[in-house]
Length: 223
View 1 (cartoon, one colour):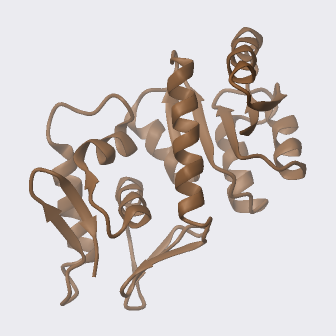
View 2: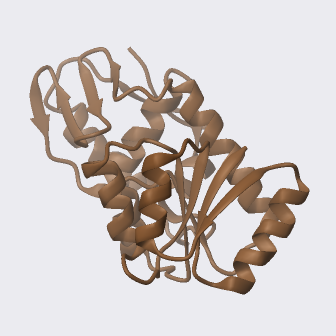
């Protein structure tokens, strides 16, 4: 993998280089958001590891800039000490592919990098995902069904994106919970509530239902 690490903590950066280069990966580094933007826009990377708290331009601003202004679709993992759900959802809403809370283990970061790169490859980095008359524009984050624009809050768009990326395969409860809450899922069954809300927006107004429950396994979207 060729990776860009945007991180201002020199000790963490040195440890990341030692581990990832030792695993055979090629790395570039940026100590601030402006340098990270320049490298991301002028070089080709398989993935970007992006810290949230950065000088000159923070990670959230850089992520929004890369996705919305520069049209960069390189897979991005956010690194941050922010572990509150609203922070995670705002990161996903801005275009992050994954979210890893500090402190973390380097093998987990490497595994997540492989996963988002593989997922991006399977999706063909397409800008629009569709099943039947349901469409999700990844650039604009616009969701439509039968030409009707659907209003989904960020958590529902995250669920829908994961289901569409894997369609028609089943996505387990654990995979969906990880997409929403990382490695800290809530104790209550909030996932079921989100699936209910997603069905109410995506399926209820239309005669053909696309979101399917697979008992004891998870959910899928299929025609």
